[in-house]
Amino acid sequence: MLSLLSIFCLLPAALALPMPIFGLGDSTGDDTATGKPTPFSLDAVNSTLLRPAQFARVAYCSSQSIAQWSCGAPCDALKNITFLQSGGDQGLVPLYFIAHDPDDQSLVVAHEGTDAKNILSILNDAQFGLVALNATRFPETAGKNITVHDGFQKTFERTADSLLAGVMSGLKSTGVKKVVVTGHSLGAALATMTGAMIKDAVDPSVDVSVTGFGLPRGGNQAWADFLDSQVGVTFVSNQNDPVPTVPPKFLGFQHTSGEIHIVDDSQTNLIACPGQDNENCATGNNVLDVSVQNHLGPYFDNLSFGGSQCSS
Ligand SMILES: *[C@@H]1O[C@H](CO)[C@@H](O)[C@H](O)[C@H]1NC(C)=O
Ligand SMILES: *[C@@H]1O[C@H](CO)[C@@H](O)[C@H](O)[C@H]1NC(C)=O
Ligand SMILES: *[C@@H]1O[C@H](CO)[C@@H](O)[C@H](O)[C@H]1NC(C)=O
Ligand SMILES: *[C@@H]1O[C@H](CO)[C@@H](O)[C@H](O)[C@H]1NC(C)=O
Ligand SMILES: *[C@@H]1O[C@H](CO)[C@@H](O)[C@H](O)[C@H]1NC(C)=O
Image: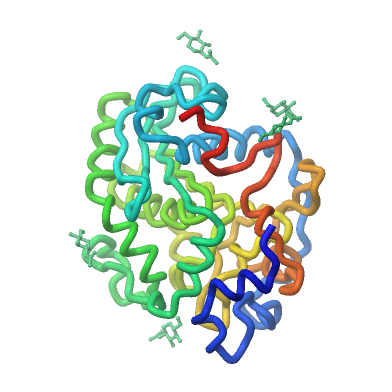
């Protein structure tokens, strides 16, 4: 586990800021929800979170092993899957894959993430501020003042066209009416943009959902509102993971609603947090009590993210 000090050492840009980077002072204000969270049952974990988490975990394995659906335990946990397409290079351009899940009658799009050190340095890199959302790709957002994280959008754009083409052809060839988009860490941030893009492109009868784990803030309030109204994001924040608390709200970033917060190490105590940036969940975390291990897991059902569980 990295100490808070070593995290700050990774973030020279952060030190130039007048306030600590991990959202100190973020837990008050008009755009911070205060509603009381409600318990989130283990049945709900299994029916809504477990499968997206398992697919997001597969995205850390090599593209060759995913193509054959033989990546060790992460692939073995998901039966009957047909791989359709992958892209990215597991380097500068993170991997994504598209698969058909007949048991859920869905198409799955999963984005690979990155390790905690890397995501924190991307998030706090001063060159990646908020920039306008690409209004060519999202024409209906013109004039809505939507801004997103520059680095996330640049990364998203590198594979967006081929990914969308793969989803459209996969919907046609399989006949399913449901698209599940998922990812962990950077992969969760990419999943929100991918979900919005797919929702824009498909017939309204196709159900598109986005589930993220260890999701950082990806854009301004207008982006969060757009995702809330057009897509619907569910994201899981694990205890004192610093990633969901950055980039900070005082720089203009805002989470969507749909947060599920893991309260302790038991892997069984989860709460659903009403509104955006609920102060009773990750947004209200003590900035002096940060756990990078919480970013990786375990989240529930002994499930952690990263390539260590892949067979190759
Ligand atoms: C959730 O699913 C896991 C793995 O399939 C299983 O071990 C566990 O018992 C399930 N929990 C509930 C509450 O159904
Ligand atoms: C997998 O497919 C087979 C045959 O198509 C089916 O019988 C089975 O229920 C499916 N699901 C699992 C989890 O094996
Ligand atoms: C914006 O989206 C279009 C596709 O709609 C794409 O061709 C273009 O490269 C994107 N612009 C940037 C700057 O990424
Ligand atoms: C656009 O959004 C920013 C916050 O992201 C806000 O400060 C600004 O006032 C907004 N402009 C308009 C025209 O709504
Ligand atoms: C939990 O997963 C880890 C590897 O991620 C494994 O070493 C451990 O045995 C697992 N524990 C249980 C109870 O399954």
